[in-house]
Image (cartoon, rainbow, N blue to C red; front, side, top):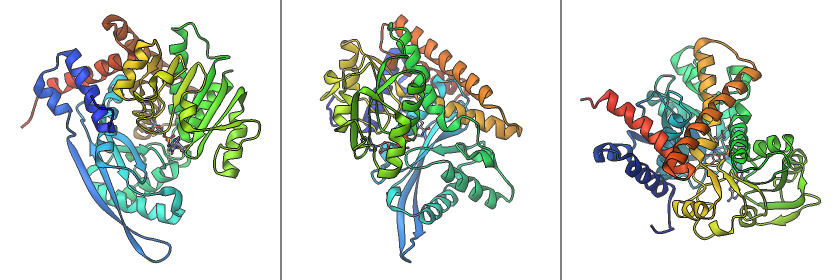
Length: 416
Ligand code: NAD
């Protein structure tokens, strides 16, 4: 397979591997290779300068045999329908691996959120929500945050949806602020799940999280919280990065201080007492645990053999190509795949949805205990399959996720 891969070609190759291992019926494999629905919208926004701009957006709903569609919304200048389709497919497997009753979806808007004002982002989000209105909702498709969207974005979606309905519908979206029905622990849930995955993988390779050297690519929501949680548990965070570049310190960085520096300076680079390095160098940094938490296609055939980490835990979706998977597996690197490692976010989204539907509010202890149980149970299930199949954890996780979705589709049957 060539290494000029897109997220969709990677997702389809992963599905092919799982289908082969599961001896899946070719018709079923073909169904799962295509999303059930893809909606393309043109979002017209009045900009602050008085001009009107049209942004391209989409929502892809992959498969919902196990429950309503669920998935984040990404604002990024390079968003494409293919990328969003891949992300929707990964969501389907992820929800099945962590065993929550959802199917997979994803949304994207082609825009540069960093260059837009808060008012412009609010108008864009509300217009996008009205365009999706007939296709989303608590029992249809429940959006959540992804790159360059956050709790505020989700509050605008909830308000727009509720205004059209005529009553408050907090369960139409997750990742909301606490004041409007958000869940305790949601903000850090993906990262807590990533660190729990790292801990479980470390246990099985004779390593301890405490004292382990950790490198994190991406210092956004997932990366910063993962660095902070690992640091709080006694790991040594040796490298972090963002879109402007990375920093390294063999002695270890204090993520709280780096966060303060980034808040003032706009990037992690030039942090005192550290050495500026490139994003590539962050991936190749000498460390025990590497957490890619930025974009897709970061670990490829070109750099896989330069990865020093003993354990790679995918905070981001699709950061490793299938060719790189092979290289890492051959050299004994344990890779905890995205559909397992970063599933803590959607698990806690599910907890938020359940709390909203039942009009309850759980404590942080309750949420994190349930998350810990879900993550450990999923990790153990995947690990057991990997042992039985003598495969890497990705293949095992795909077998578990794809297998569960295929079983649900077969049980429901095809209608009409
Ligand atoms: P975010 O927007 O908060 O942060 C993204 C980070 O990546 C930023 O620090 C940005 O500077 C950095 N970045 C962008 N381009 C980069 C580049 N070329 N090199 C290095 N860093 C770069 O997004 P997020 O929510 O943290 O999401 C990050 C990844 O995690 C995405 O793949 C997303 O799909 C995945 N994910 C997020 C969640 C969640 O709950 N937020 C859940 C599951 C998976």
